[in-house]
Length: 151
Image 1 (cartoon, rainbow, N blue to C red):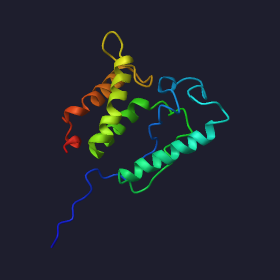
Image 2 (image 1 turned 180 degrees about the horizontal axis):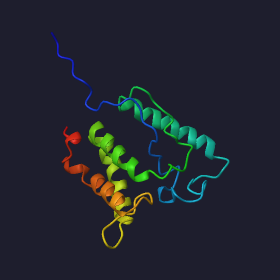
Image 3 (image 1 turned 90 degrees about the horizontal axis):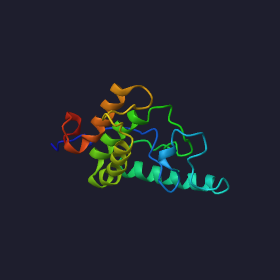
């Protein structure tokens, strides 16, 4: 009898997928709606369609059961960016070294850039305890300390 092993990272689908830098300026994610797009309005729909195709491709490559449009046409994220980075980071870390190497430097740099002088983060406006906890959990992902991260 052949043993059947579950997938290395068992998940069915993803909501928001990280948008490519050529499509938007991630530093403006919480700016006024529509201000973060890098392309002229006339070119935006086609570029967003291209971004959706890439999100679906990545999700299929990662082995997800259901591919979504990755919410590539949406700017705001209901104020849960920090929360999303933690779980996206876990997915990228567990899915492949290539995904991880592509994902982590950008989010690491984002957290470093947005850290307060006292070492805290405000995190989605929820508060310093929440923001700092999420930022630190995300930044420690490469060390693999959390049990879920055991490869």
